[in-house]
Image (tube, rainbow, N blue to C red):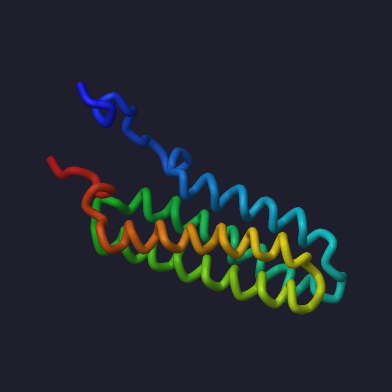
Length: 133
C-alpha cells in the first residue's frame, strides 16, 4: 500500500486545505475590520467581510456539486472571483489607512495562494469529481 492509498479520502469541504485557509483568512478579516471606522460599516467593512466569506461558501458549494463537472467548475470560478474581490478590498483598506501594510500583504498573499489552488482545480477538475457508478 502506498502513502497515497493510506491517506483517508476527503469527506467534507472542511477537510480541504484551501477551505481551512480561506476560513482562517475570513476570520482574520472579521477581526481586523472591527477597528475600521464606523462610517465604513455599510460599505468597505461589509464588502470585505462578505467577499471573504463567499470564498468559503463557494468552495463548500463546489464540493457538493462535484457530481457535475460544469457545476463544480462554475462554483470554483465564483470562489476565485470572490478571492480577487477580497484582494481589491484589502488594497483599499490598506491605502485608506485602515489596515497595516504587513497585515494587508499577508492576507493578500493568502488569497493569491487560494486563487492559485482554485485555478489548479478548475484546470484539472477530474481528481475532485465524484466517481459515477
